[in-house]
Amino acid sequence: MLLLNKKGNKRGISEIVSYTLLIIIAIAIAALVYAFLSKYIPGAKAECPQGDISLEIRDVSCRMTTTGTDLNLTVVNKGLFNITGIGIFVGRENYKTGTNMNRGNTSFVQPLYPGENRTLIYSNSKPDNELLTYTVRILPYAIGDKGVASCDKAVVVEKLDC
Image (tube, rainbow, N blue to C red):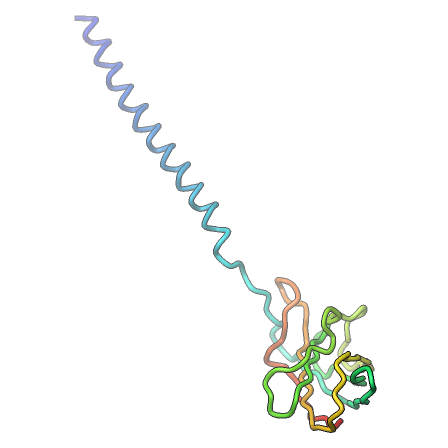
């Protein structure tokens, strides 16, 4: 009778161990699925700082050369936040897109502080011998909570005759 009692206890313990192992395996599989799927879910996007981001074009001119177009641009930070860089897009009038004039060089060495102005010179290596009206679009970049973000609502557009 004593022997039967011990066998009964072992059977109960083995069921508890098997359920515990099943729970551990289920948790491990859930952790693997989470790790796999978390790579495909986009993270938090950097956003432009809330408040006054304002950029103004004080002066803009262009000069056609045999090797391309030179763009001289003076911008002023009229907002309350530092601007860490700008994207400059030049295209024909009434076009939504244009040539990125400062490709690979969108960040300033020093930020453009509020009230500060800066003169920038960019060259485009595509010669265009036609005298046309162009549109200059400037997209400012600022440092937000999650890194550098483009400020889409602060785009500045200016017409330019070349």
